[in-house]
Image (cartoon, rainbow, N blue to C red; front, side, top):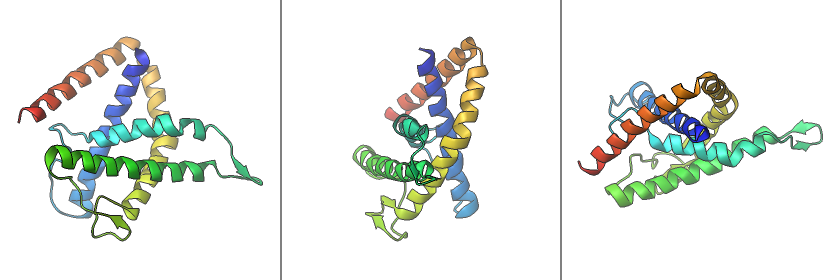
Length: 176
């Protein structure tokens, strides 16, 4: 049960980081002004949380291997390519899910070269690859260390409170 609670904390942590990233792009980079970039009311984009967990489960084993071409370790390159592929598929699937459930999706990449129906594009996929490398190699080890230092009761309480808030948010979304 503790592992599930820890992974839920990771999910929420990356959902909040994703929301901050989206708001930063919207407000600072593109200067469009603030809007809630998540589907839910709270300051989180759950697609980032799901994406982070998918990357952890699908690429964690690869990160631990040392794949070499001659003396050159190419594991980080393979991890980067895996992140780009996985995040592109996740984003594409999310766009179809959002379109089926809401009638639209929340982004439009038609202005980017090498896009598919405005749903995914090379530029954002590469940015997700870079972000995924930062997440897997820098943030996740730090976050795991921090969560492991927390008493088990604290992990249980924090994950429980966050789960209740997320469930309430989902219920509010359904009954809007």
